[in-house]
Image (tube, rainbow, N blue to C red):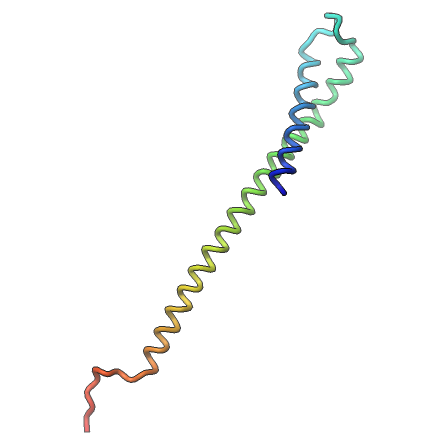
Length: 104
């Protein structure tokens, strides 16, 4: 879910940022956009940047969650292995040693 959310935010932010930057870089007197239009589209830069940064934060949090899940699984495997080892040691301590010599 985090990847899809981040992708949508990244696309929206990129489009808004691109439109805003393009409108500020073009000369409104060129005829294809008015000064008011360039100013209106130019205001999309800040929300575009905010959406873009939010998308990358969502990507980073999703990656962190996946890393933590993998670490949790690895820790569980190590814990199970140690638990089996402790049980084997305890079982070996409770049964008699066949190599021990009996003294009468």
